[in-house]
Length: 160
Image (cartoon, rainbow, N blue to C red; front, side, top):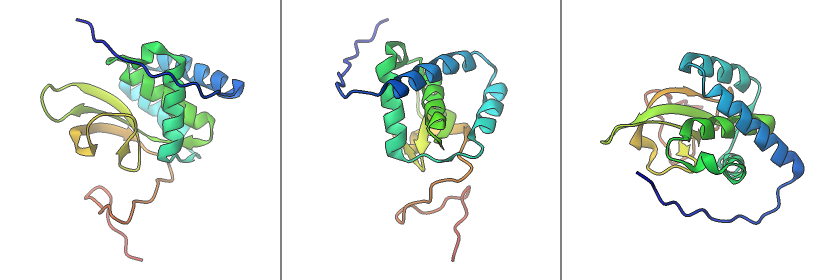
């Protein structure tokens, strides 16, 4: 079965440094995607140390750069290397997104990997509750929740 996908052309110039970092992130992500999940998680936890939380704009820029550099990462089954490359590119720039692996909560059930900023899935279809997270690698200093977002059971509310 084939899927027809329309790719948009982005004519914004990217610096040679960003292009080099993006290609390096893609190569490392493709290798890292071959390892078992616990190894991938251990590597990402170590890489996330000392990085500040990435905001949505930084993650979107990194994801757009990854997608502009590799047509293969546009595919439906390329979510793992795409999300890894995005996270690695953010790390090269001193930030870290929340990297997530989970499954779709409604049929058809499927595994998926993605990056988020706070509770916003970057570049993905569906909402925050569309997926059940199996594990995440958050930044060491998470982004503060917006005023309108209530704390969940996982994130206790703090009164100051």
